[in-house]
Image 1 (spheres, rainbow, N blue to C red):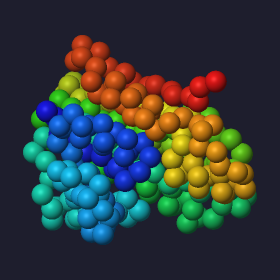
Image 2: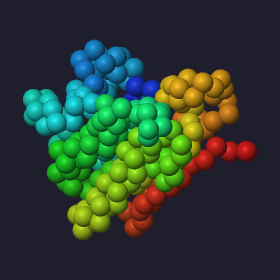
Image 3: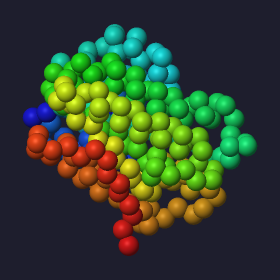
Length: 229
């Protein structure tokens, strides 16, 4: 049985991964943005442990983590939470850039820094759920894509730095997935949302579990997941 730290476990891909790991009897530590959300997660995943840290304020994570129990070892650290705000570069205000960079890039970097000693102990795995936007930027997606391009750079650097410590690093690049975030994206785009057109979160969860379950003689560095025909 392993110990897994997950952000974004409340819905979508994060919830699918947490549910699958819980069914296997794994030890879950779920990050919540506040105490109310932590209570909700505890009810959603009986037996899981929760701790609190606001990804929108990454500079406060060190203090928050320093005042709560943390796992002694971490077999997988999974960065799944994210936010998206669409807008043209000529229109998107600084606060929208800052929010997306904070949640999607700076917070994962800071959480990784704070928890890396426990990942090293387990020779564990760091998973970054990126996006197709982390590989290709399109109109109206500049802020989000910039944060996800940065997340790819973070993962690549971490992989090179921690290979000698036995830490594996995987970036997963899902296409449009049927999650609450996708509903928000469609609303921002002014389009009707039909979840059946997009990837089931369970399919992305299967990809993540394949990566972390891979025997120690191999490592999946980057994997793209696209909607089927």
